[in-house]
Image (tube, rainbow, N blue to C red; front, side, top):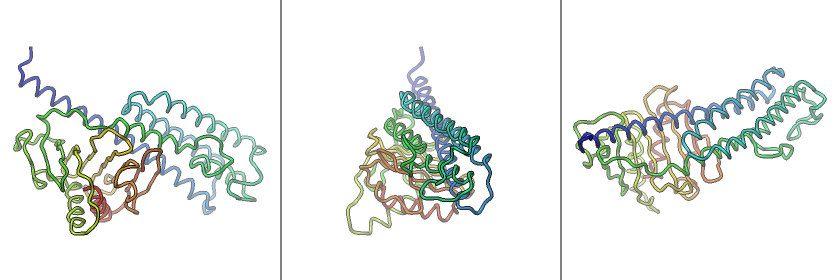
Length: 321
């Protein structure tokens, strides 16, 4: 039989490992989502006519997006139990559309003489590319059924619906009071200088993204107007990284913030999910790349300078904290 202290320590280590594994899988979901959006953007850039493309580019774009979509669905199924049946059914629909584009690329007679959204007299490659882009976003009445982007939207809604406050052992938690919010703080690395369950200061937490958000709260506190509702949240912190999530387990009210601010452009990013009923839903910073879902909004910032990322986090803090 394990002694009580040993059992609690073992449970605490297991909880930290689970949080780290979940964090890695969520990062994988973000990377695959970002990859999918980057493929959309590349296709849109090529469609403007400034590049010479061939059918191989178009069919490769279809294949790469389907590969990313499959990886994205796998990530969602790991993070959200029970999501597989609906999402794999959606994925099968998208595979059928991708196969149809491959058939069209081999038989140019199947390509309409008039392209999507009024694009006339284009080469077959560009007409097919326009049809593929319309499939991505669902921007044309000619594209029947859900667009490819619906996989990303449905996936995040599924994850956030099951993203409530986890059962973190008290041994792992410290408490941070910030602008009326009570944050349960979990350190990515062991912090032997702080006793479990003790109250900590922002300086002791020493998390750069959270510190930037707190700066935004200080600016907003001096302004008149409605204040954000107090909440109980979990913050998983490192020196340059933050995961901040609300604890109500309701996707309509959910908030999740993931950020890394290390000074390395390739590694730094900001991701937000705000449920439809959260204060941040209508106030996402304009600098973010925004995607609408059924139950919320996603926002991304990446490939931007360190200063731009810092300023965006400050603005997010003005709304959230």
